[in-house]
Image (cartoon, rainbow, N blue to C red; front, side):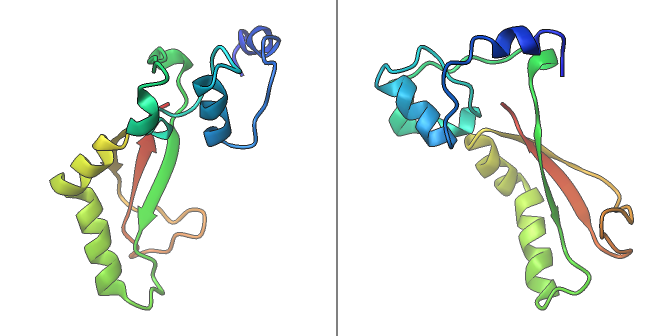
Length: 126
């Protein structure tokens, strides 16, 4: 947590259960501002709220790993799905929904990943 976080948290007057509730409060004027991922502001809601970019040093990226499991019941379908997501067409779809490009990496045997599994990790930009 940064040194600024405690000071910023002093200004929080409402903690909602989910991002839809945060966006709804801003939309109807019950909150001056809310912090959600850009992709949580649907095109329908975008006309009611203003989206601000956070500076890179203040932003938090949420990782979304993708991999073919070693014991997948349909490994060919799983590989095809991963390839689709990582393809230019798949990356374009993700970009339209506020995700930054996936960063491929060599699979490492960590956190339950077994040798032979292919993995990648994308992120959602806040």
